[in-house]
Length: 158
Image (cartoon, rainbow, N blue to C red):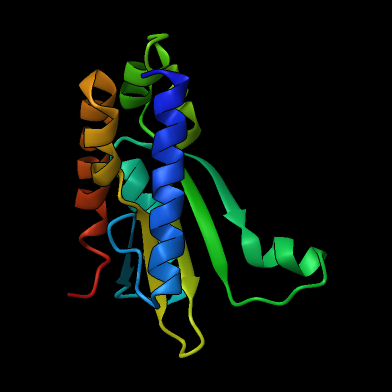
């Protein structure tokens, strides 16, 4: 994929998100959000374990509430769990033709509370991007999405 195509992809997604927010709609095609069956701490703990049990690695857990507090801002609990599957990542990073997709790696899953006290899990809908990226990179994105969604199913309130 050429740099021009990446620019078009980013521009299109940014436009979609801004239009969805302006129209007071959820950008559901780009981001997925589900209520967790568990409270915040239990969701983070159990999700981290489930990711590891599925053969993925947790490369980082970012505590954005803590980061915001260091900058004088108060927000409800929010952590972003960065996860990586080396096999999937290698499919993209091991071939120069697909390395431009690297900004989408590692996969990120956010866990956060809202004001009403419920906990949510959100993540990028990589499946929506996969067809735009196409080829092996798109297939890999779809496979990674399917794998993470399978893990998340035990946490999602239906």
